[in-house]
Length: 303
Image (spheres, rainbow, N blue to C red):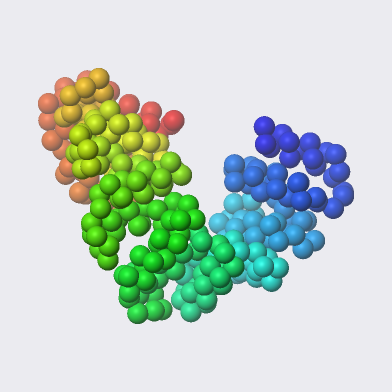
């Protein structure tokens, strides 16, 4: 529907200067994955000086989605948007300098300055990136208290990574008093914003009754959400859960299938441990059931 609206806008005035409404429709279309269509509006709008378009064009160049990947050119377009006070471009360029990319070396000083500039301009979501720099000691002296301070700013702005990261501090009692209820609250807010690791944390809290009585049904639903978000670890956790936990969800075949899906989607550093975790789940399956589990795992990947 959004892409159709954008297409109608283009048909209505294909040669006219892009309006703010068209640029916003293109930005939404880009976020929805309609990269090529969106860029037919965003590139000329960026060239005409529209800061929102310049920011998204920078994203496209950084990621190679809708434009040929060119992180160096991305820097230029972010800087054009920043010159007009675009706070998201400040954040995006800070992130690019924090992690680096081909042709753009890491520069923690520039990253920190840009995060601080975004925060000073009222963009609280930049708190997460700055917090990570203090947590890791990237270009600054490692300072977990400052990390918590900036994670809190990011969380108050609703930034899902900051919500999840701050939840970890409350769960572990690092630099704050341990508060599992607060941790679950933060994880839940992050999960509802689409954070897969937070869904996995919510599932574990409900599975083990870390705040209130165990709620296996809520755990199952949360694990499924994490799997839907592509988190391999959640596949392993869900595999063990549906194999061993009594309830309508219990199914050893599906359990092993979730485990296989987790293994297939795991990072190289995690795969061997995941394989060892899943080995006991296949011991009591017949050959036919093992084949069914493999088909189930493939179906998860096709969803």
